[in-house]
Image (spheres, helix red, strand yellow):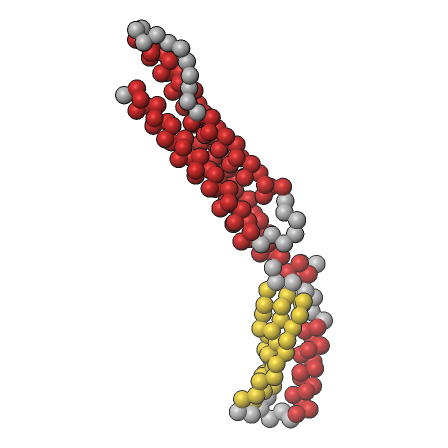
Length: 186
């Protein structure tokens, strides 16, 4: 019973060292997947720091405890066991708290950064204008130029590509427009 109660805490701390250490590259991979384009904010670096602090606490909990006690006095054996277990328990609880804080803060930071990145990313739209079937070539060209002029004066357009599609006598002008959301908000 004495060896089992101490070994359970040591095994848990060994397991959590692996989990907390593995959480750092997973978090950094998610940040890289997010594709932070501009200089990363300091908030992105806080969760890995807290994960490292949790790892340190779990390592301290895993270290063996030394103490002097008499094998002939049962009360001293029990007191030494309780001291070893309570010290390890305090370190495990602190490490677990740090791990949970780092996980929650990492999730909040990633969600926040994802929202910022999605607001920065361009958006594509398809805009069409139908030209009547009986329109001649000059009418199609005039509508094409009007369409292009109207789109080019629209704020927030980063680039556009206009195509003319003819089917069974009808003409459709199609523009694929890439808008920059930062410009749209101005």
